[in-house]
Amino acid sequence: AQSVTQLDSQVPVFEEAPVELRCNYSSSVSVYLFWYVQYPNQGLQLLLKYLSGSTLVKGINGFEAEFNKSQTSFHLRKPSVHISDTAEYFCAVSDLHAGGTSYGKLTFGQGTILTVHP
Amino acid sequence: DVKVTQSSRYLVKRTGEKVFLECVQDMDHENMFWYRQDPGLGLRLIYFSYDVKMKEKGDIPEGYSVSREKKERFSLILESASTNQTSMYLCASSHAGGRKTQYFGPGTRLLVL
Image (tube, rainbow over the protein chains, first blue to last red):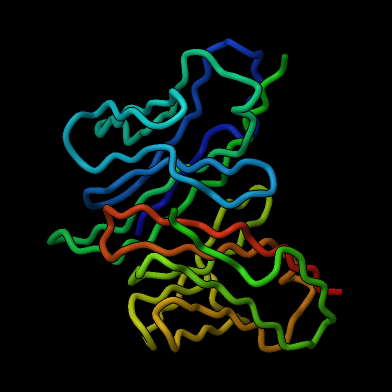
């Protein structure tokens, strides 16, 4: 079974500063990794995902994440944040069984609330 | 534009009532999911369905049931609502397979008194 740990429950940051949201996972098999964002009073939407290939993944709104297999991490970064990035961010791992099959179920982390201050 | 809709944004029910939450997607997705979102716990999977009339338990199915009679519609049923089921409920859908993006509805905030 997979599990996901987001190391920070809240991250306050000033506008135009860089930010890193940390995510570690555990799994006995290969995984697919996702970052979703939830703006206030909305559902979740996909920021980016790692399936295979290059370990640096670029997403929407200037975000990127790096898959590190040896450290089982998938940290999310943005070099310069905006007020509009204030939201809750969720890291998730997809079930991927031996042989490459998957139902597409996701296991989510606890969420990180990013608050960008002017 | 992809769309997942949920029947209510806010719902207030009494303890013991039977509660129906409905979710509809217009993307011809095979998979549909019901999650519960609580502060500090993230999203937890209640049930999912990978085909019409097919369902699988997620991590926290106790106190819930589901129904999928048509491909586009997935219902979550609280047979006898309890106060500990006060939460945000999110529906999602996706095509089959682990690589696929899940698309989420706006959520239903349920309060059980």
